[in-house]
Length: 105
Picture (cartoon, rainbow, N blue to C red):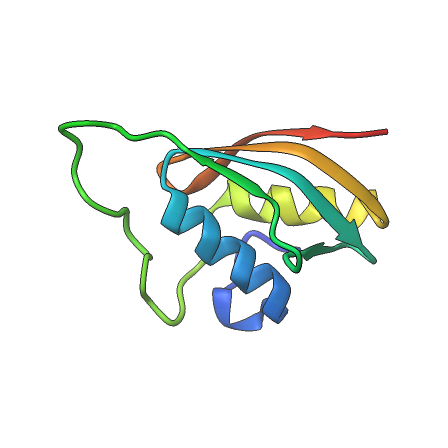
């Protein structure tokens, strides 16, 4: 994926994962299956939300139909492509963006 990738060109599965990360805002996604480089969200992975008291609402991009993807999102999707078929143990989310990824081997 290029650094100028837009939400509108993502596959449905990747869009759903992006929207899930935006909903979580702070927390983690655990035990995410990856099939042919695409996230599998049915059945849904385990989601753990971190509640940050006294913080502002959702970050930019949440609820928008289209926008340029941040570098962290592009890197996550590139990693999923490399995984191919497998499992991501954990994706740490900060501010609606993937921050750290743990891949099972």
